[in-house]
Length: 459
Image 1: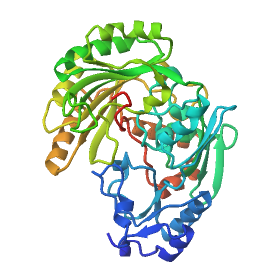
Image 2 (image 1 turned 30 degrees about the vertical axis):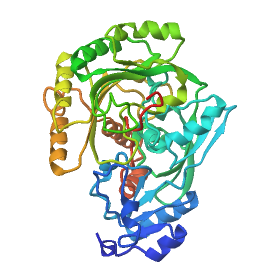
Image 3 (image 1 turned 90 degrees about the horizontal axis):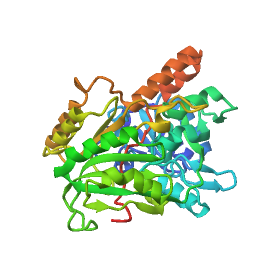
Image 4 (image 1 turned 120 degrees about the vertical axis):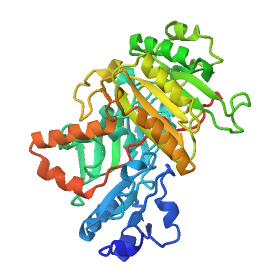
């Protein structure tokens, strides 16, 4: 990639717009700047820009339009594969300078900059006894997670994070800074909630918070030799569980890390983790059937809601990852058996997760946006760490199994489904003239990832 591939790019003007916080191919620092969290993805944009506020974002958008370039917005790059190989005609706009978080405890609202991570939000809301509908990783960006849907540990009771979005501020394709909510530009507000971020550069979000300080949460873990038994029990349990329980079952290979107990390093485990809203007696009653399988580890109990942000065995640093996720209509013995077989291959998948659906997730949310519910029994997420092409091929082959018959029936990539819904809506509502230029200018944004993070505090 050379600067010559973007002949209309005014490098001096770009640098002036961002106070010098722009890197062009060949500059010192360009390579680390273009590198996403997911190191398996090679991004080669025409330039990387770090705007410090909404005005600088707007100026960058106008400059990109004049130069005939697109804008690709990225917070962390957990889901960078969405734009891999398509940035030669784009400015990669990093939102890391837009990380401010302010909380209104009376209104239970947080204003969150587009570059904020969920750890930033938890640290700001925790002193007020408030919680957000975050996911299970501290280093995932709030904006991509929220705009793409957002399903965390309280989701079966409270639904998707995208439908707890109260307002958004963004820069449109013509460089205008706008604010949208249920009253102002409601069509755009509808599309943003679950339709992703390809309608402009979001600079700030306002999200609703919950009055929650403590939650009954933790993990049950067994050796992987018990995987089929545990998954069978969990799948039957999950189908009948009340809304206050949100869990996942995972087949995971723990890394060889010194911070893990020696008895866990490098092991393959089957785990059930999540949260239950309610008192101890109710939670213990709900977990009785799962605990009857005598887990090797049982850390469930009352704990700070902030601990929901960390999980055993997840990565807490940038890594080369190949991943995929689909929604399963049903979860039967054949499906769980295939997952156990895939988890045992070597090299192969590092994590296979089944995130429980149903409850509020399966019911259309009142006044919802583009994604009002998720039909199905579970979200299947698969990921593998790849250090070379042989490992990449092995992981991709394992993931491909679940895109073939009989798995193809009823399986829909979640974010693709959202975008198709938005596209249908734009045609139906006569908005295509307005939104089409945005699709041309803005590359797909970073839609976040399911289940990446650090080891939990109890370990």
